[in-house]
Length: 228
Image (cartoon, rainbow, N blue to C red; front, side, top):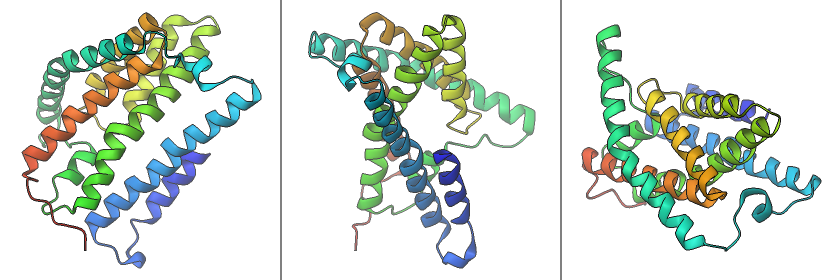
């Protein structure tokens, strides 16, 4: 229900009555989805853990034991998966172009970053969303809650595939669907190996950071417009 409310609000931003530019509407829509999807997920999980009751560390393996090794393993996984993800996305893009005879659409976040003269404030928001907010919220929701719940009910294979397909689908982009689904399987593997979401959060964050930096460089945002 929280996600649906965010989608409705994002849809309302498309109306001309608000007198916003298309670029500002895209950014405002992403902000709305951040609040109602990522923020909403964390709030509801907080209520859920209070009802059990269980701490965040107990629920998601965030205890300090071997924390350094866990972070290093996650960073290595995120870095090593990058070439494979780019290759799968390139192949997916070409298949989509051949099937539709139109260029494959990029993710909304990438299209926002491609806008010329993006202000520093908007870049900072996009960076925080991409590198900090999304990895934490999505790992807690998909790997920490959804995957674990389905697995503990006796369906380990379904847990992997349902979680991965939903994770890929919620990014609403055909070209990135396959690499994100495979990436989800990688994140599940390192979560199982370490018993800590810290590893998958680190891998997810590094993966997003690398793509964010490359998108900035490709868009030529060497000198963003300062906030006025």
